[in-house]
Amino acid sequence: MNKRVVVIGGGAAGMMAAITAAGQGAAVTLLEPNERLGKKLNITGKGRCNVTNDSGSEVLLQNVPRNGRFLYSVFSRFDGRDAMAFFEHLGIPLKTERGNRVFPVSDRAFDISGALERELRRLKVCILRDRAVNIELSDGAVSAVQGRKNAYPADAVILATGGVSYPATGSTGDGYRIAAALGHTIVPPRGSLVPLVSDDPCCRQMQGLALKNVELSVRNSRGKVVFREFGEMLFTHFGVSGPMVLSASAHLRDWEGEHYRLFIDLKPALDRQKLETRILRDMGESPNRDFEKIVAGLVHRSMVDVICQRLDIPAGWKVNAVTREQRRRLVELLKSFELDVTGPRPVEEAIVTSGGVQVSEVQPGTMASKLVPGLYFAGEILDVDAYTGGFNLQIAWATGRQAGLSAAEYEESDAE
Image 1 (cartoon, helix red, strand yellow):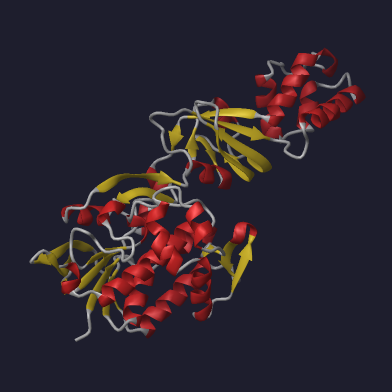
Image 2: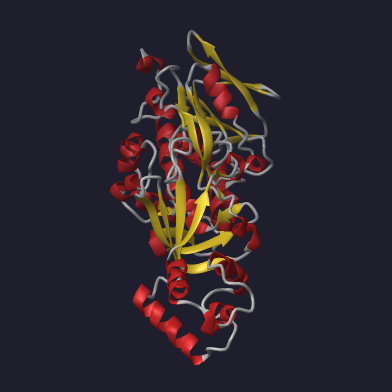
């Protein structure tokens, strides 16, 4: 009789787990309450789907700040290049962009989820629209999954329900509750790759302003640089967001014991001396102009008032009235615009969840629970998360694949 494997969750990790287990000959049932599979997958990469990163296991591990060592085994067996080969085998042409980020050539996330769904159907995975309520045990080992509609007998169960970010996609935290009921420790979830909150009124003043080609640095309370990147960011009514800010948030973990400050280099192509020379030239050419017009030639108009306020220069102030000290402060502002941040936005707004099932209770080589025979974990439900660049989806593919292999091969004697 074929091994009966029930996969809970039809996201990236769950679909990969189901495909892998079915490919090993298991009779697989995939439970997903959403009408569509891969609902969160379809919005990744702004709808383009950053499938993975064109990297080997060493680079992948360098981009997992939380519990990366736990993933050493699965990444060594299935790295970014293996994931690329997998999707190309499914008929999806891929391309590699800046930072080795991998996307479908079509720039359509639906092509990725569609290919996975076709493979599920080809392998005769039974896809059912049901929400798992709990996992039933017999003699301490898994025996069935109880859904809202039916019970599903199982020799092995893979829990791949995701975290709590983007709850509208089905990431409601059900998996945490199910795992906790079976005795697993849940590290409290919080957002990673999430916008940051600032009380500085300048953010609301500049809301909607997107900065491009700037350098963002983040320092902790001891003045140590904990993040630095060149790229894009956005001011909002609550603080800051955008690609660089989301990446920075993954580095800012100790909000209770730390104070973080952002430093934005608005003119990274110019050093301070060259920038001051340019400002002196502009001021010398128009000594009777309003100073704010000089500033408008250096920054976006949404930022002009904020710069002048920080320099204590009122509207209508003429260039010839600006002191050398004010001019040098302008140079410093342009090279190091400071902003205090007070914390992340709610986890519901995060791209990924940090926290989840404590990895010390999971076998890293098999994704098997150390507490419950026949139970496996995959994807965001685990307490691992990575930086942007396709690394979080690679965690889903690698852990999903290993959980699928292990569940299909599971024998009760393995747990004894």
